[in-house]
Length: 325
Length: 276
Image 1: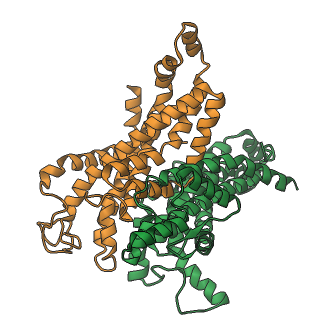
Image 2: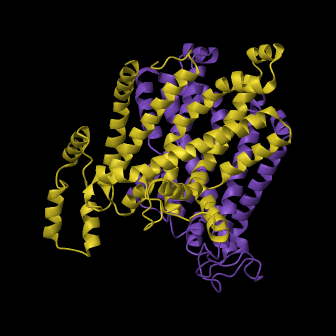
Image 3: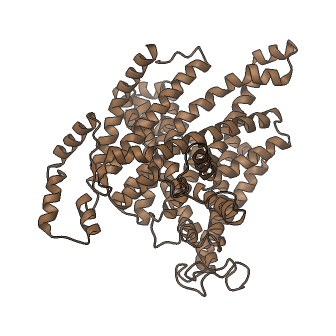
């Protein structure tokens, strides 16, 4: 009950921001040369002005800008994202179809980056200024500076072209039509390289933050007390230090949610995954404004949702922080 | 002067500075070593690196010299990265300064706008901007700057919040100084150093953003950008993987250099925060 209450309040608080985003993007798109109908006509190989006028009327593009904006927001309230002329389906349907691969990719990359960053950060902090620390910190710097799309391409060269261990792209093998476990394994093998590619930069950030916060917590009084009690080092790290050192890591998940969605645009294009990021790219190229606005709306909702979950997690990790304030 | 001494005590910072000097040197000498248009045809397509002394790094799919594109690409990377960073820091500092100084309703409104920009995925917003305003060098640079300002804004706001009620500001206020005088003349000089150091992070991200955009063929196709070359190399990835590999290494080293210099500056200017 408390959580529902909290969720409601958080959602209400984010509505002005959401509205600001949608109005901003909508106004921005008014500067775009050409509209959906132009793109459609170009795709059909041209057409006469009368058809164009009819189409514009059908899509409500002949109304004044404030009217169009009003229409758009009113439809959003009813969760109607409009109709995608390029895909010939409602935008909500197109987005829902494309959402699962992206969510899967984001969850996998985030878990990989979080746990690998956690382990590497702890190892680096335990051996501070010795060779494991130097090695891990250097790797972190290099990962941070690597363009993800380039890493993806090189991974394809090594693991798909030369070693032939993993598929170079796609979400699953078309025609395999397998079900159950076989299908799961198939999808998993397709997701290994994209997950590593998308997770790389975040791994670099997480390990740096983990190392820093471990070093800070290791110097606090209660750790000294635990050591004085004669607890062994592993127990101190696992039972006492980790929980406190995790707080900055968890904060970062919320801050990075948007960056990760943006990163999936590039990674999904490299590995031709049929996800939301690729849809965003396609709708930019094809000037499918309805779909683009829908994606912006859904990404904003996703980031807000992730931040809400992070707040809940935060309250669990540190009881002194009460959720909602 | 202590700060300079502290900077050169860190080997990582020295490596970063050297790397950055190499990239700057490449950008300056590009016209001298490769006076021809780097996008003009130079020889047979797809010559492997080190196999022909005329094309040290080989040629791409259409027979353009890769080494020439790498040298001229250094100009583009530094130009876009630098200019976008200046744009992002100027917008960020202005918004952060006003929000932090005035507080109240001004702060609420400006922070709502900042929040809106932070909730939107950077790269998605960049796609929208480029789709709307086109992908010339200028528009891409401005677009990268526009998506990168929220972090400097938050940093500046935090600095202003902690500085605005210090004695020297109150002294200025009793002397009858105007708000704008206080913001620009008194608080800003004190708030700026951490923001300037953070600019290295903004620049590293800006270079990566532009290269990703160019890779997707949404950046200016008429300049020798490293990202453009990687996008080209993707078409021949299976056999001639060097076309994509070489410019990627150039991006990696440049971003690494900028980050290392930034970290070195941070450690040199804030010795108490070292290691964080």
